[in-house]
Length: 309
Image (cartoon, rainbow, N blue to C red):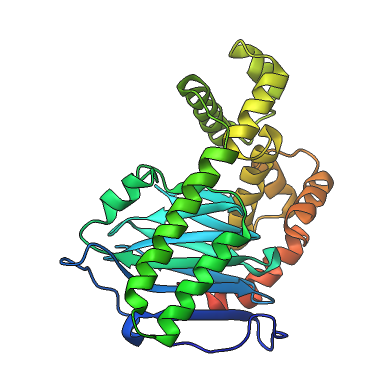
């Protein structure tokens, strides 16, 4: 079991962690007899640590839900990076590859729960929690944090009947998720979802070109306002912000892995004016491209082998 530091204490280190584990063991297992079993729950919060990565090529034998309570997480699904902002949860099934990281500059806080059991899938289906998608748009709520905290505390205290209460708390979490999804997320038709997926793929393939949102919308027989609104409702961000995110992400890769000049990197990701690129990069990442490269080489590489829950 991990530290008992109070969550409102002033941080003394570069991150805060407080988690509880069934039987005090961090080794996951697959429960074949019981319908449901909670294996661990807890929280991570970054203060000054620049990077907290997790890399599990073969996944885990149990299930996992990660709730982004503040900041954002960088997740890789099917080889593509997806930035998951606060107000969303990520669901990992057993043996699904897990690759994600959190950045200190985002002041990210996440809560997580690992669970297993022979009826997990049917339990999730009962609460209409989709298992065909990694990302669950659940919204931000203190209710979530309260439930995660109670599960963590039960795993730490191990009072009489704690495993039964853990299952009740987990079902409360699923019920709360179901209500928030149904109440706060607009219904998206199959047509809209297909069109937004098409747009997302186009932006991913052509991000380094001069993309006109007006021209793209017209090419799909949509008004610009309708397209912008539908894209934001589906993806959680505007088309231009989505394209900017792709450009910055790929610029980061070039800054980390090459010695190319800032001007050349700006051109590669779609900007003719390196000064303009530098301003956008600084606004997005809080540091200039040159400063980012320096920080990465001095600090990120030193912590690249660290991993979180």
